[in-house]
Image (cartoon, rainbow, N blue to C red; front, side, top):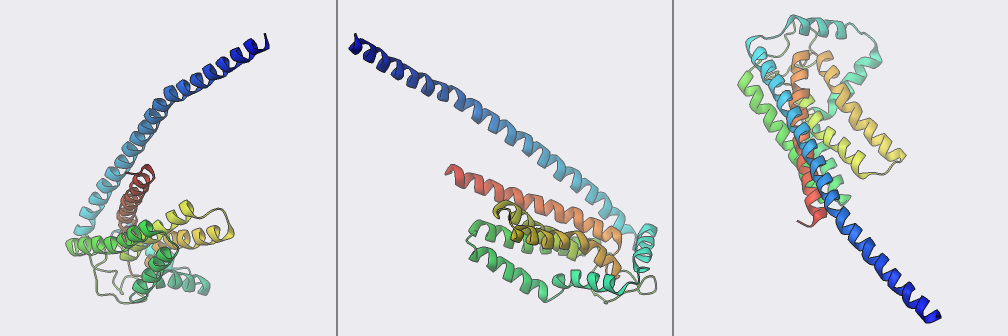
Length: 253
């Protein structure tokens, strides 16, 4: 009798194991389908955002190519430069400093080396593409539009620059490169004071560089807006390239 119970118990256990295995096989396709549907939804949103942003940028570029500045540009610069606090002027100069030549090359090189030294090889390559690509793209658009810089007889110009104005190179560089570093810190570093400090630094540079370029008389507000839009598009593309490469590596493709 006891042997019978044991035999029945073993059979029941085997049947339970087979049922669980069958259930896993049934659930597995659903997980794949759900993941595929989520990736499709994200791709549609991503493509929609990129297309809309590019359409806005193209419209702004056409307008900027026909006018040296807009009245709202002049009003914004005059209002911002009316702030006479010494600490504010120092802050604006400090924010723009990493984007000037030659420190922009030095800062970029050191940060790229830091990413490589930390062991993130794929991030190193994408980070370099962010920095180099965004600068080339900025130069191409500037040469095409040929918008002049703000004139000293209209606003205070802290430093005379010989290049064209639209879109802002500083803003594009900060958005494309420092924005990618902000993404990496958020994605790769665990919650800690280091993570918070780095996110504050990179996020602060991206957020304040637009104000600094207008305050220093280097760009109009419309130049800054164009820099944020085009730099943001480049950043989205680079983040997508990074994420796809990481996903393929995890899937063993």
